[in-house]
Image (cartoon, rainbow, N blue to C red; front, side, top):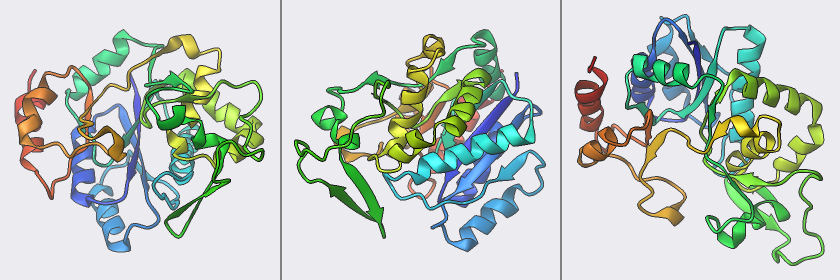
Length: 286
């Protein structure tokens, strides 16, 4: 079972290196995107910390403002690189630099081997009660991000100038992160090349990384092969904050008993002990 990880990072260079070293095995490759806004010194620490590993590839860098299209573009850059290099892979797993495995590499590989052909991605059709106004304002208006500021046009969702969703597609939303089979990755790769107007539409969607892949795949012939689960333990203590809580040692038991493959998010500047607890209490188990 060959795994390819796309990792989106922008800070915590030592934590990123630790993540890669923990996931590294003879049948894993890593494609790392570092936000173009990240300071050059931090980027160099990331590169220098992994340059002894021939299976770590740093991607072309894009600016990734929160809620902007840059996150989709960065993920697609990872998919392009994986396909162009022709490396063997059965699954692609999208992570952030602040994620961490909560199963061993052997357990992760066994999980996917036993479910080969099944993808894992959280999704729900829109409109949905999970998002404000059903999520319709995310795509029915034009969203621009300029110098880290968010501009919306028109202001009223009832305006006659509202945007129409691409014809023939049911909009879907969900988590930004997923574990997709080779078949799904190949489908997305071909779809993006053949549907430039679809891509252009999503450049002005609000938080498009929470809709882009869900909408493509849940409108595809592969929809029935996708389980509604992103395989992550996340604590949304404040659901409307837009960001999950930072996990610490007080979360350890919930993390360990979650049954998930990965958890997010961690920050070693807040609590590094929890990662050591995971290393010693979970990942060293045979």
